[in-house]
Length: 270
Picture (cartoon, rainbow, N blue to C red):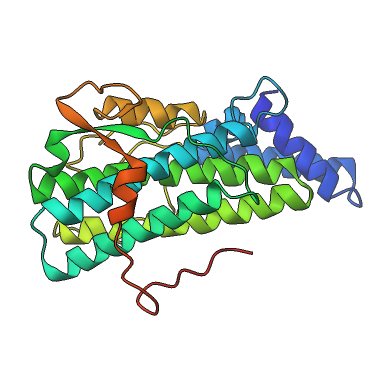
């Protein structure tokens, strides 16, 4: 039996102890058919469900990657609203995203969570700010990577259990929801359908057409978030693979706009 079905079997047994063994076996068989039919086996068998020291998806790794990603997002949105010609609605949406990413960073690095970014010095390709289309497409692609990463965080933290795990899982879900909004608004500003999916994409392939990542698989290893961003030309404390420039979070974040309450609800999770 695969690791995926072992996990499913364990859950079904634990939650249906009052039912007969025959009934539980039928439930396992039915779950296996659903998982296989929907192509979800990777979600159950990937590192998202791994436990112990052999898993890369530790709280430390997840919070480090997330904090570093929010450094990048704060920089890109802040500089983007300064340099890229945008219509008034998109301009306000990007400004709001910039402050939201900054607040995500503040929460992740707070004493309550304890995350530390791997670096606050980010190499950003020049092409990101070269045109409106490039910038918005970068946001779509980047926000999808963040969605995948936070869904992975939800999974790993929920598996950890206890009060801390469930609380961190909720934080990750709240952050993922904001990233999904950012992705949708960027798509809409490109003249495309923003609410283009029923379920946020986790490890499956990118089905949205016309993106640099169309057809690319998601990830079950939190480290792959960094790999995918590097593939897009970004660098973390080192030059990226495309012509660009370094941006320092501590300098750029001082310029991050605060468009203010009530336009943006900045209340942090509790």
